[in-house]
Length: 322
Image (spheres, rainbow, N blue to C red):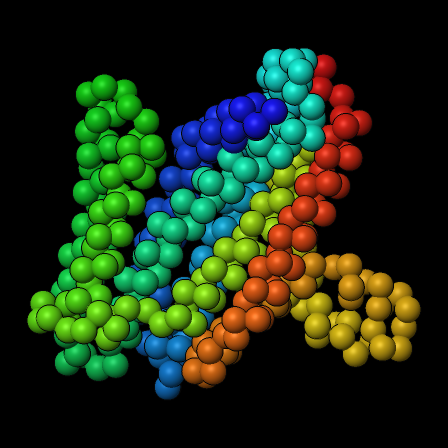
């Protein structure tokens, strides 16, 4: 069973990163990160705090689109094209099939989120230029843009010569380049002068906040996979978007009413609360994120993922695929 599970996961991972939408969303996110540096400059104060908020928002939205489109690509299309029959007709249960699909999605989305998070790190390392006299952060520009442009050029050249997949090649080359560049930038100042690693590295709160956003993305991926057993691509995206929006305002809508109404209490306790994953105020206020909160919220995300996959398995069991 483990061999079948890993084979399904590996095949889903490769299939996901080869989808054109995977590369488009990742590149679009990496382009938006430096644009956020300019957008954050229009506040009267706290520009760098707004930059962090814009970066995390970009990561969440890109994760929403990527998880929704990827889930429908690896499941809905297989059902519509009848290719799923070649797997479920063999001694592979539908629950194992769905679990393997989610694990492959998890690996692919984790890779995409990591690449986009590196772009986020570059943006907060550069910071907002407060005046026109401020200097650009040269190492960020060189390693950041170089880590995106060079892999794309190499991938396009290999595709032209050998027909190799552009997205796969760009990811294989770009991920280590961006990683090394982000590490080196922590040691380098705006004009290539050496500095302590802690001065250029993102704080623990930023990394923890990024991980919690990733937890929210994986919850959306599980919901998208469950919904895609019955719905198409557009409806899956709209469903995930609705769940995210409702989950972000659950506290505002139902927290007070839950103490007075049984219906509101049931809704409040059963609707995924995405505000738990959004801890930007703690990051910007410098309070930090307690380890206990971080652990409980991660566990909360895991439980929602399991519940969504169980619901998806129940829906998939009765779905005609022949």
